[in-house]
Amino acid sequence: MLPKEPAMQLLLNFAKRLAAATVVVWCVSLAANLPAEEAGPSVVRAKNVIIMVADGAGFNTWRATSMYRGQLGNEIYDKPGWVHLAVATYPLSTSTKPEGKDKQNENLVYSPQKAWDPDKGYAWLRSSATDSAAAATAMATGIKTYNNAINWDDLDRPLTGKTLPEIAHQLGKSAGVVTSVQWSHATPAGFGGAHNRERDNYAEIAQEMLAAPYLQVIMGAGHPEYDTNGRRKSGAPTDKDCRYVGGLAAWQSLTAGKHPAGWTLIQTKEEFEKLTQGSTPAKVVGTAQVATTLQQARGGILGIVVRDEPFATPFNDNVPTLATMALGAINVLDDNPQGFYLMIEGGAVDWANHANQLHRMIEEQSDFLAAVEAVVQWIEKNSSWDQTLLILTADHECGLLWGPDSNKTPFAAIRDQGPGKMPAARYNATGHTNSLVPLYARGAGAELFRKLIRGKDSHAAEVWGISGEFVDNTDIFRVARAVLTGQNLAP
Image 1 (cartoon, one colour):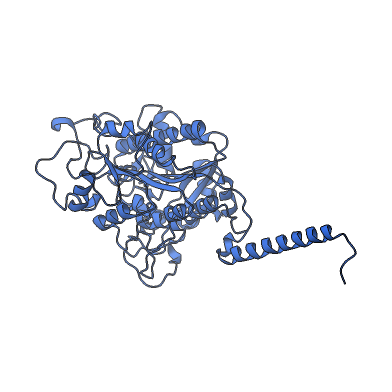
Image 2: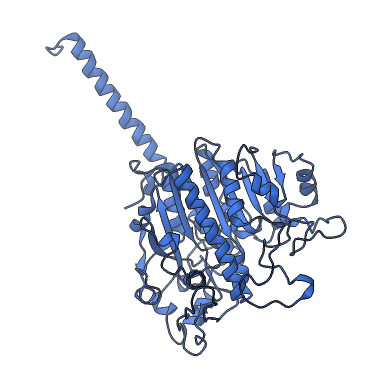
């Protein structure tokens, strides 16, 4: 028997029930296809996600550079609105090849007690560190792996489809990577979505990046026809010379403008500067006219010995700054109305710390910070903090940089000697360490990091004047993915 209500009302009520049932079925179906941590309502979504990595820059690298700049406590990321945390960077294992276990080596997991031990802390920090490949993989996929792996897991499988640029592409966004070192090096390769079991397979990695449908911008050094001082080398480049750009055949196709993926190659400083304004090609691979790094590896002019002080040696004048490259990359990527994902690396900070070059480290970190300032200005002028998430971090610490007496008194503080003066400091390693590194985030979804706190390091809080709360490097992926997709984080 039909209810006693007008026919039109009956039809309306039936339509409402049908629509509600359809929505429920759709939501259940969608949730069933999402990982458990994502099966929740949309909370925040970013049009753009920009991750900036100062390679090898622990807290003391950031602090020493700010001391030299006279900006300690007053850098752009110290302003209101920024989330300040630390990041644990340990890898799955310190093996350089897949072990087939896919099990976390518990001795590597960050421990404040081990890290600050006055007798054994240095040794543990040096022996339990990640490399840039495993760190980039963790931040680009959310998966811990062995040292040497580029988006490759410990079960010897490529992490296909799981990287941030691949996810951005699936969402209709553009993607790119920028670095101050060779563009097929570990960090740009990892954040650029390459997949390789061995980070040193540069030609293979470069070829995959060039063929990837999800990259619209690739920029860095590694030019096969120039030396570290930005001077043209004699003779034609060999296949070995071209390994960082995909090999001789790939380089010839790029220079001829005939690469099958449709890349436009730019090389000169003027071309990079022009790219920052106006219309742009759809896809740009920028290879600056220098061999390994934009500036860090440069030598003295005509063999003249120059003081080991920041900015004392004349710069290579034929290459762009990291800030110019960053703005050029954004100008290409922001043509997509759906938004973009971009990683910008100050890669040579790590090179300077490996070489224990405090003066070059300050130069490289200063160049990185200038790029940060340029990106912030772009966000505030051309986008907004409601549309864009900006994350600043490092992949690991390098050099175990502490105060001048830190060889006698472990963890003795660096001494600030005033603006424009080298801080009093010394290195206690030439390699990477397992120390905490900074994370500064602002914009759409930045507060999500506060939901992912893994622990608190009270000693770090005291020494560096921070909260001491830290997340894991895989959490950078989790937050970036959450705001790209608009999905909630796990409780």
